[in-house]
Length: 322
Image 1: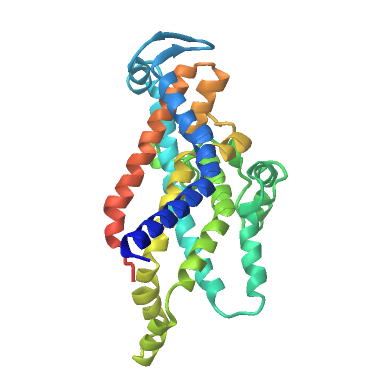
Image 2 (image 1 turned 180 degrees about the horizontal axis):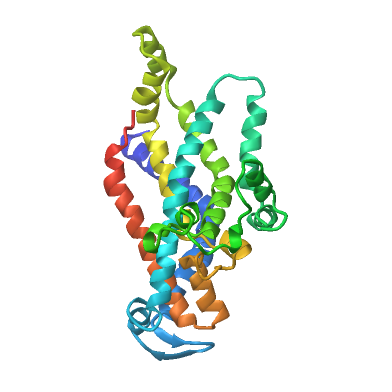
């Protein structure tokens, strides 16, 4: 076979392989197009019109103005501040706890597979069902959490019904304003979020630990490095890509939190747990202001994109890829 003929055969084979590859990913692409991208484009379109039940006149960016600086600005910025507070509570604790648990579960121990399964079970549990159970655990009258507090000499708390700040409660009401801290209700929802999602992050960190070559540890031990030095100088730097991924995913999940808020507090008490995701639901479905809800959804998407870009531009500089 001549060289031009062989080249033509190779091109046809590559074209056939490419066509087969695109055929395999076509169903997934169609699902993404219909249920993700099409919905996103529809939300952008809705946000540009006056849209209650049926579409009305074209308003351009007036809906965004109403949300950002107009009559809905107070609700929007309040829900955004609650969302950011919720993110700052949950994400760092999730990362630290999941890293510590993954490091412990990575060691050789009896029943390691059982422990790994137990830590992963919360993640595959329905958020709705688990949220209902946590509502019972945090019941101010007979909840298990209050029983634990009574054993250590702390009085019962209202938990998900408490709008006062955590630091205000700890100081006996001496603090005011921003120093009061997040409401106890928001802290309660955050505890549930950490419990529910930590299993997924443990699995990701276990995968990252498994990708670290044992040669690094063997060489460090031969040089007389302690286990603490090995963890800080080898494990953590080589886990930085995994940590970066976990931080990004956890931040995105926290910024768009809705299910646990809806089940556990319904945005209360006194709107102290009304995240931006819940505010969008409230405006869009409960108040029927489709235009304003869509505008808030678009703004939330932009916020998530900006946070993600910030993480990629800033945090990725500290990522070491081995």
